[in-house]
Image 1 (cartoon, rainbow, N blue to C red):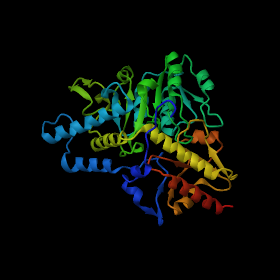
Image 2: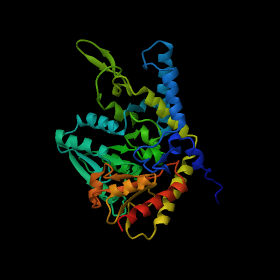
Image 3: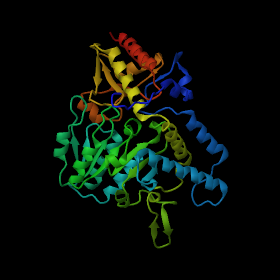
Image 4: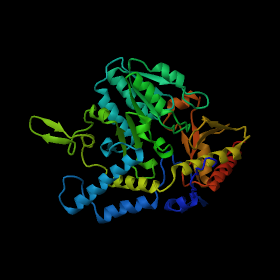
Length: 412
């Protein structure tokens, strides 16, 4: 580049070779996996790490004094440190293990809800995943809080002017996705956080997509809470977490009661552990946390900017291949969006399109994508979605375009 900087080369085929499942065939065709926004595949580094933990050094964590307990605890807490580095958190104590992004949001909702009163306001956007909608609806029913909805523009971008108007003196929380799982839209989280904080409100960011594709820096974003899930980050299911600023976490009461989250228990009283352990009742997802740590260590071996450029090139290639098809509508074209291609086909239901494409080995998702308010905003009862990841290739993009064109022929 003219300024002397360079973007590191990224070899998607080398990355792809580390995912055993991508060598298989589906319906006699090479697998083209384009459903990573729902759940990403797992590299051998994760599979091997979890197998080794089960085969060679497994016990329950914390409190144990024997060798296996100490080894497992060390690996478990090392994974927490890895997550903290990945998010650029100030401390690993700001990372709370949960079973995923959904539980992390529910943890915040359950704790915050105890201090909310009727008439307090929560601002959400039309592009949120149900995980960042339903817990706030539950608070509306239980506490009488008011939900305010920031609209989405026709190109899939967030109406920032309307959002700013919605934030006021009664606003207690702004809950927003970092990157839409349907539109691919990447939101200006820092500006949103500044607007919310100026009004005295907290900010929760759903980072389940953003953590994968947006190189999140929680200190720069300045959100009070940032949630993520492991299975979209090439790690196992059943693991995710919550980042929180210390003051924001300290203000939340415990989410669940049981072992591990206590300091002392007597017949008359209970005192609680400090953060993060006060939110981690019971035996945690030990192997899954270790697996997520391995996934993030593996991912850190690549240049994030090079991956992003590769994914954007795949999206551009698909758009070029399908340009001029008057039967095809792309949903979400905001500038700077992530590599998600959500679409409808004239005269065909998205479920039918997805099933026909599967005959050609191409895996896409169809339905409402757990974002029913967004689908309603665009007048849709369903849509299909291809989501690209670091292990996808130009050949995958071509196979997607070819299969989609063939699927359309069934309805022409």
